Image 1 (spheres, rainbow, N blue to C red):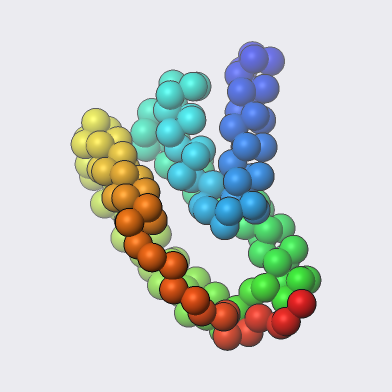
Image 2: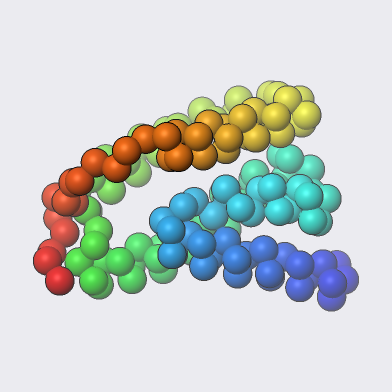
Length: 133
């Protein structure tokens, strides 16, 4: 691996980490397209790599939010169980799909999420375990 490749991957990781911590997005929303478009990763490799990279980034981000009373632990536990089962099923399914189809499905998902966020009104709701600041 060249220095340029290492710097590109570091930059992708840094940007994804900042956005994950700032906006609460999964780093894969940025990392997967960046790895495919900038570093020419295969879609399957980009997704697999992103899944592993998310673990330490999410752990540190969650810890920071927990310290400030902004983490719903009970809800996170239920989400985690579903997430583990879903990740297993999703990974097996992704590996069975053609790379081009997988890339298109990923793009459709991102467009759908963006459209929903732009078109949906915000509902006021306080997290269950959140402490007032």
